[in-house]
Image (tube, rainbow, N blue to C red; front, side):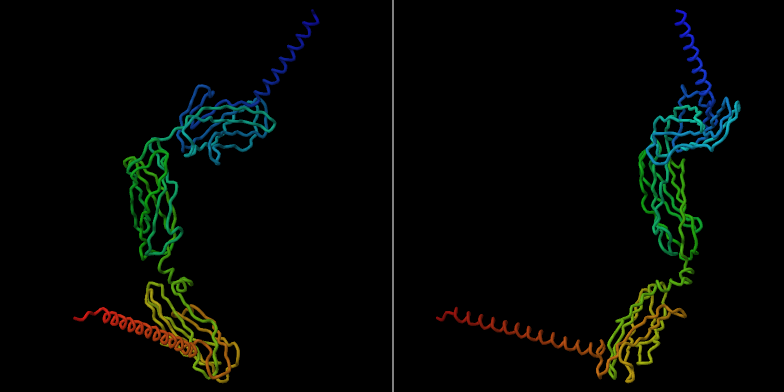
Length: 426
């Protein structure tokens, strides 16, 4: 009996020792208090804190340790959010001394897209060696009665616009509030240019998104080049609430277009050809067609010249200077003929097109010089071929016309014969 009592005594001492050791280990780090925007959450058992989605809170965690612990971190977070971005914050690593209370500040941002529901704020304190403590607090996440959010600003053209042109803006709006919103006013403005325009959205239902109609702005013709701020303001709840957002657009002023190295090239379209033609010596030569189209806002004069062609003679008609108004096209004909002493084979020359002092294009062309008295290019040979084709077409038309006349005459004779046969004499 005494042996049994001794055995139970030993077991009791062992159990008490284990409990004491575990109690000391568990009490190494303790979360003494947690504050949400300076409001204590208590022990987390009886308090349910109401918060609004979209708000940002400061979480203060009070921690104390019964012994010195190195490499400790504090974390506060929410789980159950159905999106990639995590709601939570984590402190840097710090060391704790026994008996000293540390207050660590974290930031908790509640996402606009989270559901209205009950979540748990989880606070964790952990050391590298395994010492830890944790507490959970219930948060009731609600939405404001009236809350609109500008999700996106769609600008067309997207990155830059020329002075004097139109700028179209559509606004994507999300209603995160509990109530439907009626008569929502959308205003788009560029204050630096003194322009603005507005439109209304009849209704945006709760937790729904809608895109406004395109709002039209015309950039002033005299606007200078540079970045401008596009301001979007949305008024709702009978004008009591407002939300705004900004975007940037680059305006290309007229002075930039004039000074830009590519501006004249972009506004002028030049076509010339064909690139290669056959030219026979002592013949009339061939013709290269040059067309210039002015897509600019003002009239422009273009000068045409030929260089690098001592093997032949060149003539430009109607003139080597063409004047084209806005949106107009002008055509010049470059006549090329080979000299008697021109080397046979491929010869090159260059057609230069200038506007003012600026060379718009240097077009390299080729002429294949052949021996003979007739040109094999698209000059007189082309005219001869055209006349031959025209003659063939004329003959075909005359044959068809003769057939039609013959058929009509034959038909008339048949009708007269039929009438004679049907006459009755008395």
